[in-house]
Image (cartoon, rainbow over all chains, first blue to last red):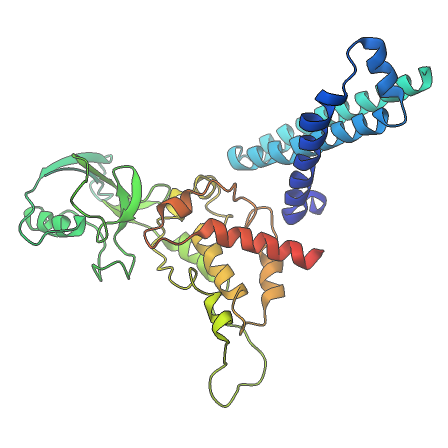
Length: 110
Length: 231
């Protein structure tokens, strides 16, 4: 678990928060195209694809550290803790994979 | 003045209860501890710790009207009645307002609260510049009363693994000391998901410290020291 232990998790949480702030709160409302075809073109573009991938990467990393903290605080039995952490990891990885597949599909269709 | 005090005697086998008391402050009674001492004359079975009665020893820490504080520093004027007194929250109760501080002091000892310096001893004392000495202000004044740790939700959830605000403030006191040469080892010890990073920056510790110190600021400085070291 050294990958997301102590200081590293704390740094990941802060950097991902900054990315989320910049990408989701500041940039996207101004840059967002409105209809589906425009969105699809944006997602398949050279700039849009990596930006959306970065946004969801930051979202998943941020959610992982935050949810893991809540689990470590409130769920004390080891077995239950491991089960809940595994479930969170599977869901977040699933979200990330789904987004990356969609982006790849959008890039191929444009 | 009306007081509601938490009573628990493990030897009696009875569950904890709140007991109402009525006691009149007399001339010269300024602080809550004065009233408690008067109360003990009425009921000598009431147990609480106290020693210096002037906010230096930290033994009369308790939960006063929902907020941790030292009875000897809490003015009677302005206290809402009935004054509800409970033992420090989250700590095992030994009897009435007396709690078991074993774990709290085990955390304190774990941060090695002494100067570590393997360099040869100077002829006289190890000198500091006024600026180096100033860095210890707001840290060395901690009296280990545990008001902060007992008001920290993170410490309530993980009292066995999280060092807690008091221990971390003490840890930073030695990290910040120019005469200490074990900063790297101290930071290595603290860089742990439980020991340091259970702190959620709730800042109850700073809010409640009867000495006006800021453990959350010290914790932030430890995190920054770790960050500087790894960058």
